[in-house]
Image (cartoon, rainbow, N blue to C red; front, side, top):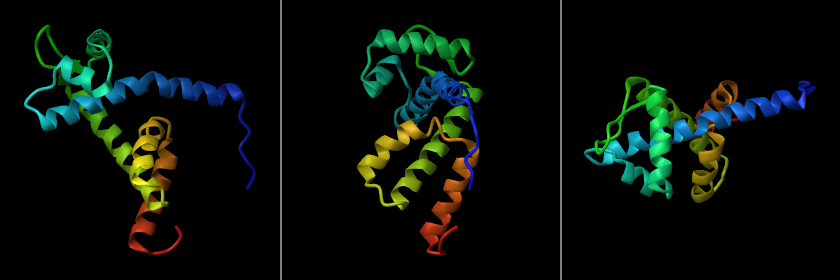
Length: 145
């Protein structure tokens, strides 16, 4: 199979674009997770979750608020908007698919947890769909997809 011809700038442009949404996806996913485990999600919860300062979290939450992904006020919990919740759900689904694919291929749980966190932000819809097909085949024992 012949490889598609891309300019290096095309590949790097996509990677830069993926990086620009990576933090937003990580934060809305974390807010959703913390909100499932606790009655509310606060700046301090996110700082602890990511191992960063309150100032860093505040700056990112302000950006996410401006993008319409979260609602918050000073000294109040951080709450996902409908749009933020939708992004969190899609990100979590991608994360779970990548994780399951790696484990199904024999990657250890510990490594799969770490690797899935990075890969989930850069995997294309086509690759993700093929991962889902492979997972189904590998988990059901129905052979090579």
